[in-house]
Length: 444
Ligand SMILES: Cc1cc2nc3c(=O)[nH]c(=O)nc-3n(C[C@H](O)[C@H](O)[C@H](O)COP(=O)(O)OP(=O)(O)OC[C@H]3O[C@@H](n4cnc5c(N)ncnc54)[C@H](O)[C@@H]3O)c2cc1C
Image (cartoon, protein in one colour):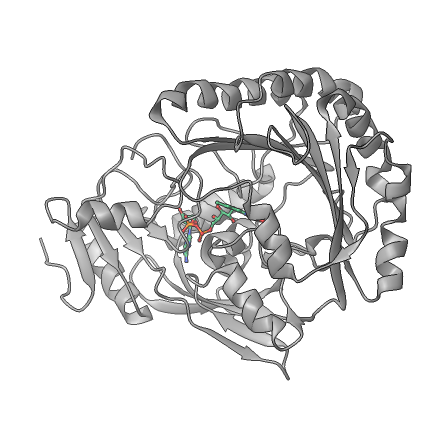
């Protein structure tokens, strides 16, 4: 067995720092019971090349971690190598060309901080800390994505290390299959992206939101309204509900309506939010439109995803009617555990024609359940809430998002069948020895 190159940090199971290194790769405090043989912390592309060659020599499978925000900790597998590339986080911005390059370990909010200073924009994710690596590979539901498209549509090229440990480049002209796969394959990508080449946009002149809160007895009315107005909500507006037991001013379960807008002017923002005037009355609280930095909007969202909690998450797309969905949704609401557990309803209504890419499954409405708990004793109850909720909703599901995937526990479609077949053909050509792990299973 060849030994690990000494220039990068690595930990074997018996090493003192092993458990800390394994733990550090996961944002989810619910660590899986899976133990790689070796954890390698790469800091450069050359390290990634050397690590993949080492894995090949030892016939190890490789799991890759960028920002560690996979809810399912997909990168942590039993045996083989866990390659932590979070240190590949350099960013360079070319404002004239409206282009940037970013390492996969760069966090969306870090990229946005840099871009905000130059009045530039990229559709980064809605929460702090999400790594660009996993976010872009699975598609990327970013702020303003209803206008700009999935974040992966703004990936122009990638640099990646292939299964033989060669550094390569992919674009529409070169290694086009891998470029296709890098936009939507998520944890099924059969290479390691070391750099993304990104298209940038002018920063929307006005970013802000209106909020409203409703007590649980208005839930049905709110959902019926959302299903009615959904198709006509302007693309500049992201309309979503968070349903939780910690909605300010509400005792018990409640609904937080968030309507975020990305507009060219204040006038447009008000115009695009005008549909809110048709919302159900008797809200507990309604905010006026408030302009805010994207970082503030992101911070508000984070309140529902505290760092130190354990999570089990699952999700689905649907185009079912309110009548079809409400019986299942009522069941989920009635059994809603204490906060921070919650579920969300997102009015997605895709209208854009997507380019040819692996990402290929979406629908009108996105529903996701976030089971969060702090104490071991709550695990069974809260996991059961997520499991039962998705079981109730599943007859109306058309598939899932990889962003909140739970494939180790529940299989569901996440791309079109044709794209799944194409991806498997690419994997057979590019990674015949199956060096890289693919979509999660409970073990291995
Ligand atoms: C609090 C929170 C908020 C979120 N908000 C959003 C959101 O607004 N929009 C959205 O779309 N998603 C969101 N997500 C989901 C998130 O985008 C995915 O979990 C994504 O996979 C995280 O990327 P990561 O690099 O941080 O995760 P990681 O756990 O490091 O990576 C996830 C998987 O992607 C693969 N992978 C990662 N990097 C590479 C690479 N460089 N090369 C090859 N394969 C790689 C690996 O298989 C890995 O297991 C959120 C997640 C959390 C925890």
